[in-house]
Length: 255
Ligand SMILES: Cc1cc2nc3c(=O)[nH]c(=O)nc-3n(C[C@H](O)[C@H](O)[C@H](O)COP(=O)(O)OP(=O)(O)OC[C@H]3O[C@@H](n4cnc5c(N)ncnc54)[C@H](O)[C@@H]3O)c2cc1C
Ligand code: FES
Image 1: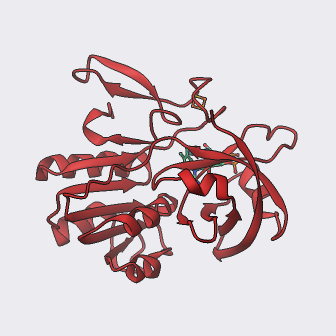
Image 2: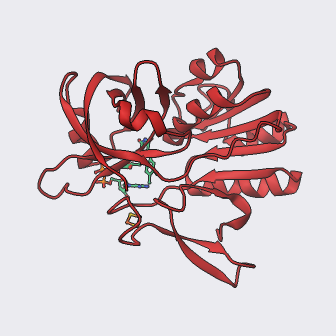
């Protein structure tokens, strides 16, 4: 049974235009959190009774804190951005499954798009072996330096060419042509679909972290479903992104 915890905000700052980093204290969530899981934050105001899902970016077991990075896109995230250090948030978590990390795999390809990049930080912290990170943004990049600090080789693409190569993350993959045993990816659905296709062409198993609009966030309302194959594209079932995901094998998703 998932619980809602009172979490004190330890740090909260804008790290890029309309992108915020929030660090919250929660030993209860931290002790069982996995890379790729998320938390649901309650704002409890008027039309914003439904919690907002935000991925866990960085877990500090010693300090008992979690870092979250989010973009302000609507009323809920604007409300969240107004919270101050020292205030307390109601947070449900950790929610969902995480990325599957296998110790036998030594060459990892990690692919992030835009605000889908944050959960890949905790993943990269836990991967052992060679890690190559491919990031795609509209313009400003985030978290590139943090991936480098973690020992990963990082490649960046921006749509306007202001950083890295001009293009998207698939252009980057075509150009670098990395060799790996597992792909882990998070970002917009169109990107994930293209990554899954690229992985299949190369014969590399691919994990994708999906995003759907959520309501309850705990598997009860079936408001966040995606289609996954039972046997093939025609024989599919609905699965809940909040409870059965957000991470799925690319090959099981009906895109
Ligand atoms: C598992 C999961 C993990 C997430 N992790 C992060 C994260 O780490 N950082 C981050 O910035 N955002 C993340 N999101 C997206 C985040 O939950 C939404 O941006 C947020 O709920 C929007 O709330 P709002 O009230 O500000 O916007 P709203 O007013 O509800 O919507 C504003 C706009 O955002 C779109 N939107 C809202 N919710 C979603 C969603 N779930 N998926 C796609 N588009 C959405 C709406 O269609 C609309 O165009 C995640 C979503 C999921 C499902
Ligand atoms: S949001 Fe209710 S089942 Fe996923």
